[in-house]
Length: 412
Image (cartoon, rainbow, N blue to C red):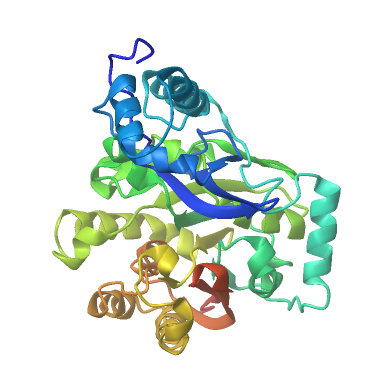
């Protein structure tokens, strides 16, 4: 497009663009949930008005003329400088961006290690600072001797927001010493890689996971077990959805903090289950049932902890609602209570009916991983151990989250 004749690439559709204020200036901040763009990256709000003109169909000359027709004042050289700056920071869907993206993903997929992506933002990347933060969080939180804990449903909200709930959720695990942990969590990014995950709602990784506390080994034996059944159970072993995912990483730092013994992990992400609400016993429903039979062994094994990662409601302007989140707090809390009660009863059908009757009105991101595990019909008793609602008043939005601890029945 530098010759002024070729169409300028459009702005990438996967970017979130937010208005922010910094040093008295109104800016438009670009957040790339997949981590390709420079971070942080923002442009002056007045310049951001040019972005809709980058539609992928117009060249530099045409865009320049359009800006001047609208009352602006810019020449082709100035516009090209601005466009080049966007491209260098991987804001445009250009050939350069596509090449950069492919390099990032291929390098990740080839690596045996999944590096932490939340360290240095959601929690300290220095292990001493991280330990100090967690020492403070767990101070005064009871850690009962509970040998029969088999599973935990816990949040993956930013720890800076939900640390109180994290401490209440994870404290009962302090005295456990399982040799393996099955991590089942919400996949927030698989929908951005649909070419990789069509008809495979479960995404298995064979990587070791690295955090500031060290590296946790992946269970090669369990990876092979799930891989053998991947066709029937809708499992993908292409793990690029794990690269930026926080839902499993945030749980892992708490286990490493609480435990001193060695353990192995099997990380599985779960994408959304939209299909089962149209045809419960269709292809996706059968995949879930097959996965549930695979999980049955893990639920019974006293050497295994099943750790399920998911938050509750996501409401307000940030998530597409017309009304302010604060206007519906009462109904959100009521619905969350119903959801947690079904979770406590280990009632998979109750959860399904609840989400279906409301058409997932509250966007419960923890439904898919929790429903998957509960479909395996674990023999458990349970307690709700925490509940919070994060009021993002500035964005008129809110996220709620809670936790449920599951104990194996000793007679099972």
